Image 1 (cartoon, rainbow over the protein chains, first blue to last red):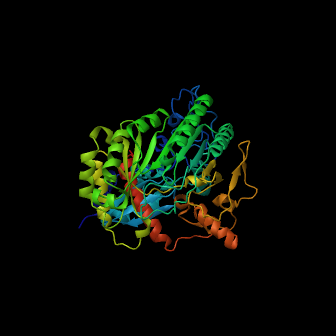
Image 2: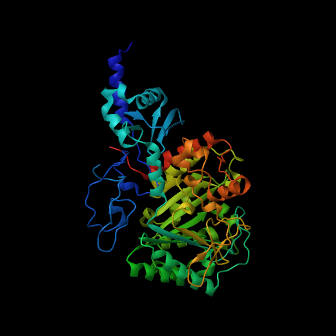
Image 3: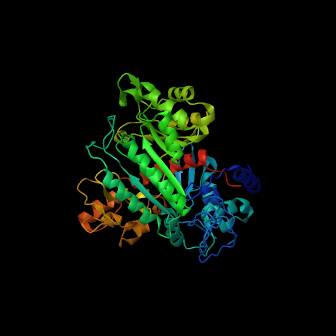
Length: 82
Length: 427
């Protein structure tokens, strides 16, 4: 009979081996490292210097010719600090 | 911490697929451990010893901090999915086609866009693109067979490319075609016009494809694959693999694709595997064959995918569909009796005599059962056509799935495999 501690250790190994695949929503998945689920989250990141839309960390904005992504949104769905 | 209200658990292959509907993240656990994992998700505070795993669950939305309001997050996901930054226009130059595939939904009326229509569409695009919200112009060519109207297609694409350059916005252009009317000269011209995406149908192995798509003395399969090999040197292409039980032959189709598509172009190809809709539910297809086809495609360097979930482009915030009559509506498969808008001389759309019930997005319709449904963030309610039919009939929107759990389980299964072959593993 395995004791609870042994079972717990085995489950730890199982959990470590689980491969969680990120979602592929209609937004640009590669950028979604942090899916901020808090209300009134404000994101702080540099939006200058983009070369393509996926660089823009405000997901509803596109990369403009001057290398900026426009204004920030209040909800952060992309890599950034919330 | 608390569990998400949008976690799904679907049995598959002696285990369980776990999915979160908001993030669309997925994973599979064998039956021996699935119950324990579910227990952790549903009671995260009871298992501090598994904090590393729980952190991953938090990152992917299965587990939440207590202050999270998921309904608000779904609203935001809807806004993101509706792509407010993009103006997308789908244009059908004609309903005519040089082929007659048995499953096609169209009756191929002899209707064509005229030169006058093209000039009005140009004005429409100008008007839409100069909306300050728009930073991306997306043109989708559809039909009938859109390349039957090649000259107008090229003219309008070059016009849109120039406009996008002038405004400094991103330009995306795709063509859904049977590819039999492409030539190297046309492919080059379309590439120069920045056509950067094709969707081309494959109806099974060569023998089956050539029965569905009859080109006289020529093999439609060989003609199409030769054109794909040429265009995929520079352009992304989805091979829409329409299968029935009889044509789902993974070994044969992969061998034939391998023989015709050079290795160096395969990273531009996606094999999108979908059952012909008329045979769905009528044929007992072994899903293991579908998975095997995905694995074999992946092995030869072609990305495989199944039918995706998500908001239909018809429900994007800025979307117009222009029919061969020159009229404007939403869905390319709109019923013939749906009254549509007209592009005016100044390039506006006059919807005053159109039936606009199906422009109503899900969240503006009061008293919908969808708002309380756990599948809301992967389903988004009935499509625009079905909304129209319901609103015409009784002024309300209701779920149209006959067997909702079964249908959604299929969508979750497909999402798991789409993620597995196309997404990244969460570290």
